[in-house]
Image 1: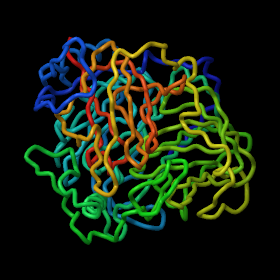
Image 2 (image 1 turned 30 degrees about the horizontal axis):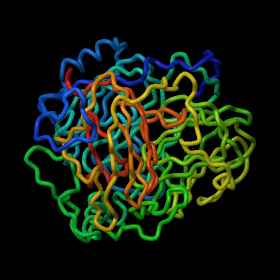
Image 3 (image 1 turned 90 degrees about the vertical axis):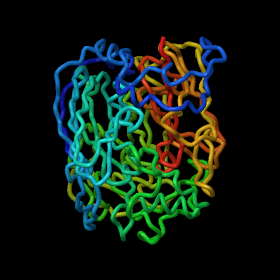
Length: 534
């Protein structure tokens, strides 16, 4: 992964551009279809159940209006090609799919206020898309096939273009089937022109669980096995189908496609019990195995900003830098009150920025696959000496640990206190035995709508009625954790627990809320928040 040098104090105070909650546009044809129920009451409509025509379309005038008000700035152009690729993980080569034949895909770096213009070229044998994880952008650029855009078919391309209004650490990945569990992901860094932090170097550290191309395994095989081995829920995997396709396992997902990858007996106290569904053979940092790990080089005394990103599909990671405390500065792109810790826990989709001051020597940047008994590492080298072992487990992994619920939003990112105008109840349901993951007992369909209105303070009342943890992710918005907690787009909800989070409805369109365990979401644990027309 690329390393960026920076030695400057660029200002004081953290600049938050607007609310960071953008507006959207997309195509009205994707907002049609039968309505399948709502959770929040629409008091303005009384007992009326909204029909599809009552909702803002992703390409509606409300969305175009909101984009104009953001005054999109200078255009930064990129091209990303999704293609089959042969990737060296560092001593083990696999056939997979990737962006530009690199893992992770080449980093995209822009500045707040820019217009990001990226042409996605699809050389895959399946349709695909790009979701810009964590960005509150215009709705038709959100990358959810059949909801906000048509699938990008094999051999076709799609021009994503939108204003970027908030700095932070983000990433991009498909929202098509279980493609994210291949090599289709890349970091997206939005720089702050008024950056308040002073540091000498910057590293982007992407964590990932890996199964694709190992002994014949593919993510499609894994999903098919989970379905077959837990009650045969065939046909509910793979929500994002092309027009005319049937819901069935993808080609190559027949029985016998690689060894069993079903995980049993995993346990994590931090995660409230069962740690995950998939027994991954490999875990990676920046696309590399520990036996050929990336080495980050610095000088003793350098102040380093590390942007940590969990791109895994089924694994939470506990992360620490041996011999060093970390100071947490940002969560999911938003500033927090600085907090020192030895270790961090990242659910799938979560990001944290930390500052460290490098000591003299060689140190493991270690990650523990939480509840899966696998430790791996990259290396920080500021001097001579042997690198730590492949499975080095520094004491910091078992030291002070921070999760999002122990952080507080920085004053500049703190939500204004306000009673919610509407509560949307989202009950997480399903089980490993049946693999029937859902929200409010309903597996995802693009026609679902949970109505909200522009200008409302919306509360998501999330109730986990399952025996597994779920990292819940919202598109197009950032919610505030309770009691002055940080603003985030992804949060861990433990089994049997409840979480109330609030956000301001200021980004019109149709927006997904889902579990960011790819196998849970693609088995049905997704739903849609839909803005009602005025």
